[in-house]
Image (cartoon, rainbow over all chains, first blue to last red; front, side, top):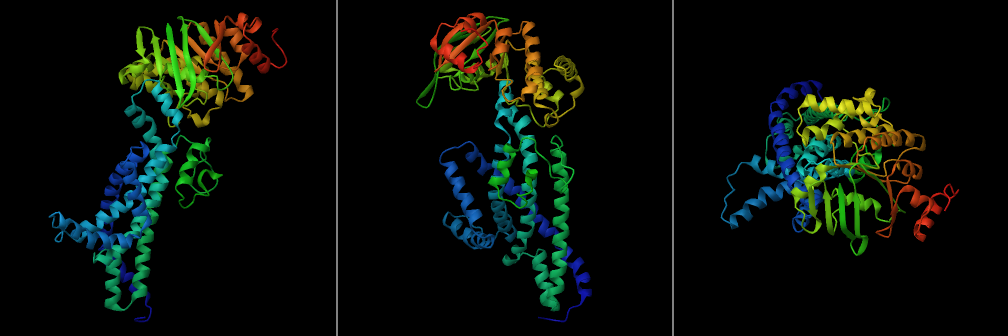
Length: 264
Length: 250
């Protein structure tokens, strides 16, 4: 398809695509923020087994994890204004970006909720009892004992989540948002050098993913410095002396690398 | 002075404690024995409300708590008068040995950092871990972890320390060092209630031995009375089972 391959185009497309990097990163950052807040709100009723709300959380999770992100984008962009019209709210003039960040945010929220729940539950209950027995309040026990450890447990899952989100944002162009993938489409159509644009595009996504992964791996190493590290094997993996309590995270979230987790 | 009066507790329909009353005087070491399922651990955990008793009254020092209408503030005060040493140590895994001991001093007792640190170092030296102050629990053996757990309990200067099978999770060769430490602090006159299977320890250290079965206190007395001349058939059976080589004349 299109013009014959010319490597030169790859290099000339790179800066043009990078002009829209800001839009992509804005979607990622906005969605992460929305997602973490949504995730926390959805995780709470599940952790504390609050009736009714817990069921609603379950429905939320099923919807956002069980339907394709593309369909969710269409439903929110075309469907939400129609529904809100019924209650007298006019969203037809709201910017596309609003719908994009809302959809990606709620989508991310579903995964964030499971990440939060699994991480908090993976901190062994005995430590909470020890905190209570020493006279700490539930808030103190959570913030000083559970939270720091849950954060460390959550980082590898969070890392996957951010990278998945980054890649998913490439679908925002279907609503006409000029982020990196949208720009690549346009450049391809203009020059007929489609392959070159996609090579340049893939390269940029790869570099960002790689950077994010490294950064988060460093954060994980810092947060888990209290665990004995395994010298061999992939960097950043840590050997757990008492694996049982942590293993549940890996099981409940069948994420990539589960096989390596804990080095079992 | 600890007074438990008519403590009852059920898990669902299954009663685990039936109207238990027990007094422990200041400086006394009481060992609770019993088969698993006899309710001994549940009783211990009721004292600091890690299990919620169904009914009864708990008094620790000058604090009295009616279990049928205990408020959050009552429970918190009860916990601040007691300390617990756990079977699984339950150290805070993201904190060093020193930080484990300091934590409640800073957060609960609100001591200044220097004071908390001084006292924690002192206690860790006392349990023989002066060289391990900055080690994380993952770097410590079970015996060392449990000694940190004991230092952590001592730091709170509680009216009573509750020991929940403190040596049951330890490798046999590590049991001795932990019992040694408990024995030493028992001699200092710290009030202790100990759930354990270590008969030798119970005989040497306890002022009083309480034998529980089926959610009831079946028999209590000095170690000599309970081990040498048990009155109840259930006690005799238990002692026979736990000491098959008949170390004790029954």
